[in-house]
Amino acid sequence: MRKTLADLTDVGSVDLIDHDDRVLLVLSGAVDVVLTRELTDAAHAAVETGKPVEVDTRGVTFIDSSTVATLAWLASRTDGQLRMIDPPDVVKFVLEVTRVGEIVDLVDDQGNPLPAE
Image (cartoon, rainbow, N blue to C red; front, top):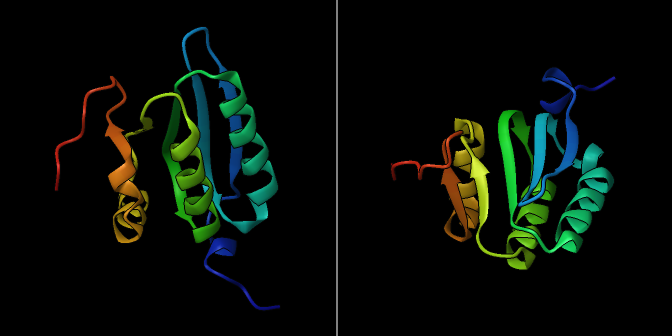
């Protein structure tokens, strides 16, 4: 059996938490094509709330193009600017390369903007 990079990392997960004033999408582990349906469903549910959306990526170890495409879709449909909480270097790199980082706000876990690199 052939192993991929995603096979060697943590199993990914997607959780959606609906707060009074916002929706929090929590991603962790390897967020890849295996989670496409779950992530897409969560993104649609987040948009349907009409609330601002924050994406917590602190626990992400791997991210692929299907995830980035869903995040770009989400950013274009949320109420206000999509906020990504304290993304690790692997997420920041992919956001930069794909230029999706230009349409989201990167913030620390207190909501403060992250300094540009």
